[in-house]
Length: 236
Image (cartoon, rainbow, N blue to C red):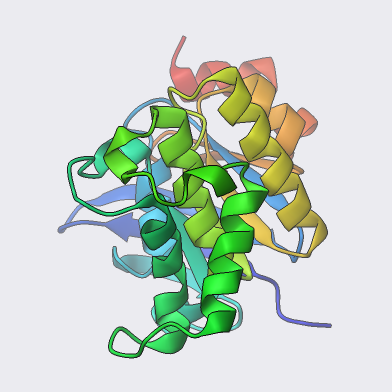
C-alpha cells in the first residue's frame, strides 16, 4: 500500500514557546478530503502551515507522503485566500497559473511547451480559459480564487491544501471550485480544506477535523460535526 498522503500524530504546533494548537491526530489517504472546522483563531491556518513545514511542530509528528513536511513540498500545493495577495501586482492570470510549474522546472529555466499546456488546461478546468491574458487584479474575488486553484492544479500535487477557498466567492465561482475539487479527488489527490461553511464541509469532505486550539474531533464528517462537539468548538 502507498504511504498515506498525510499522517498527524499527536502534533502540537507553536510560533514561539507556547503551543497554539495541540493534540491533533489523524490520517488522510489518497483521494480523501478533510474539512478543517473551527472559529477564527482556532488554528486551522496554523495547521496548514505546519503541514507545509512553515511552522514548527514542537511535540508529536507530521508526516507528508512518507517524508517530513519540508522534504515533501514538491508534491504539495497550497491555495491561500485570494484577498491575502497583492491584487495590484502586474501579472496576468495565465502567468499566475504558470507559476505552479516552477517547482518542477526551477525558477531559472524557461517553461516548456508541456508546462504551458498544463497551465492552459488548469485554467480551462476552472472555467477561465478566456481570461488568461487578463491582469490578475482586474478579476473578481471569485475569479482570483479560481486562478489560484488553477495554479495549484498545474503543479499536479498529491496533497492539496486550501485555506478558506470559498470565502467571499460568488455562486458561480463556488460551483466551479467544487467541480474542480471533485475532479481532483477522483484523480487521487488528497485535500485539507479550511472552511467556516458547515454545509460545504458536508458536501465536499469525507472527514472533518474540528479545532479550537486543540483537536475536538476527527472522523467521518457526519459523525464528527455533532451538536455537542460544535458547541464545544465554538463555545456556545
